[in-house]
Image 1 (spheres, rainbow, N blue to C red):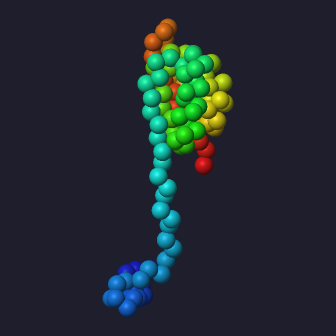
Image 2: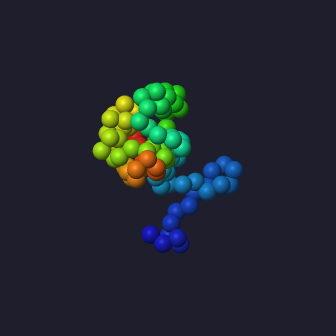
Length: 103
């Protein structure tokens, strides 16, 4: 329908009323980022889990994980994140991980 043929309605204040669908406002996305300095230590993994429980982020970015991607599935499981993308470290340096909640 073109604009000329569109019915326009005004409310009592003279503002235009919408006769169409309105989309819901998107909810805020919580993002957590941490320079991890090595994820191999169980105490560090426990600290990460506690931070995630306290803050409830939707997306988590970890840098300097210092582990191979094959070892990261356990950490993803402990942190209860559904999605995971990992770039392995080379030797004892580097390593990135992106984790997220579905929905």
